[in-house]
Image 1 (cartoon, rainbow, N blue to C red):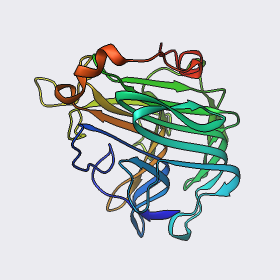
Image 2 (cartoon, rainbow, N blue to C red):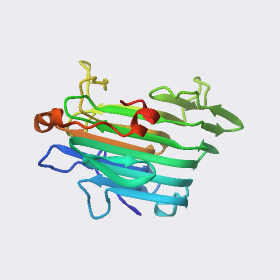
Image 3 (cartoon, rainbow, N blue to C red):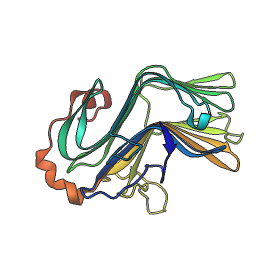
Image 4 (cartoon, one colour):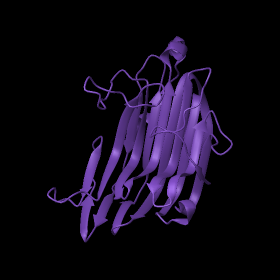
Length: 266
């Protein structure tokens, strides 16, 4: 499914009575040549006509928003829930959890092809999760099992584990202007409108008390005139209003095992 996407880097914000929402996608491309804003396999809670709670593809699929080829991905699970959490990565069921906002994006493998002979490869299962529970700040986690970026005959392998907001600059020579910056495990805290939290200087600053935020498996920025093209792969975003949901703190259930084992969120 490919359709127009709205709003900022968090995703599409909608009014909700319970103060909870989630928005996730497999691929989103913005401002790339003739593509203004387009997404593939988007999920949302509350749902929209083009974004269900969960999208799963067990097969290999080409990533071609508006017929522009960005490579391929195999085995994708994109899941969004409010007042519940996905039971497991292998099942479609969920566990009721009042006051919880949850998002997950998981792929078995991907091969992303970009202009400038750039290839981003994640050869095995890679996933991101965003979780906000009553009485707790937002929790963002990623799980990579290898990966690399190649360009111009050079290969840059991902470290293990992948640090938060790990960047690869192309070209690597800092004396030359950057053509592309690729960020892995990108984690951003936001306010309840999906805007990044700011420090005293007005620039983005991580907020350890924030109850909302988003995470990207891969975030690519490419210098495409007349503006910067923006490509995200594996996006999970949640919003939770503590004024409406912290009353459910005493009702919090245990998290499913994969959340702790795969993402170290316990």
